[in-house]
Each structure stands twice: as structure tokens, then as C-alpha cells.
Image (cartoon, rainbow, N blue to C red; front, side):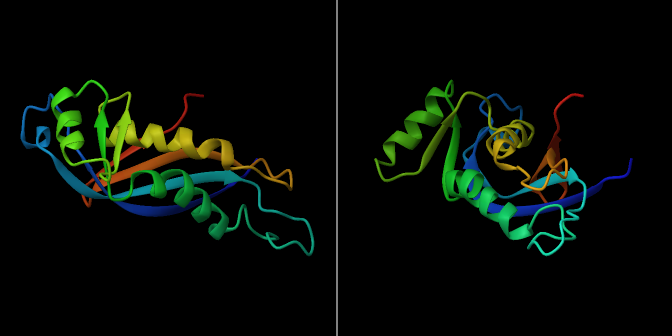
Length: 152
């Protein structure tokens, strides 16, 4: 059976550090991240509906990505809960500083999985077109992209 795949992304300006990294990534820094949802399913065949001929409206995907990824980490600093120094640095910035504490080291690989898990429950079809989020791609730099997809 053939299926169709679509992708939609949002971008964030987000800080992080990889505390145990052998090189410069152990320092506080940031990236222009791109979180790209990859969705698979069948094209909606229901006549006369807004999504006819689509898997899912791109603007609906954008709204989900915006609420569950962008608005959480944009202009924020993502810090691993076990990174004592990183957490202290964020705390020193005061209560207005946007700090997101996570239970993992915030690498592109782990952020791709985090974003997948945040978005997955919201990719739903009302047309029975087997809609599913199959992967989340996290571009950390123009040359570096990590992808997370569930094991089959």
C-alpha cells in the first residue's frame, strides 16, 4: 500500500550546553534549531472537507509545533537536571530567565526525541486516513541534523 509523507517545521533560538563534551560544546551557547515533523498517512478523500486532498493541513501542524515545541524552548536555555553548574548559571539570571530543565543532556539527538514525544499525541486524524507522526528531525546547525523515530 502506498502512503504519502509530509513535513513541516518551526525554528527556535535556544541555548544549551553539553556538560561532559570533550570540546567547545561544554560551554553555554545557542543555536537556531529547526524542529521538523514528518507525518505519514493517506490523502483525505472525504469530499468537500477543508483537508480534502491533504494528509493534514500544514497550518494545523504549525500550530501544534508552535504550542508544544516553539513556545516551550524559544529564547530559553535548556539545561540537563544533572548539570549543577548550568543550573546555577541559569538561576543566577533571576526568575525572569527562561530555563527549561530536562531529564536528559540536551543534544540534538535527545531534543529530537523530546519534540517527537511532545508532538505525537496531537497528530490525529478525524478522517481515518492512518495519520501518524513517524519522525522528528532536529537541525542544530546547517550541517547537523538528528532524527528520532520510534522502533517498529
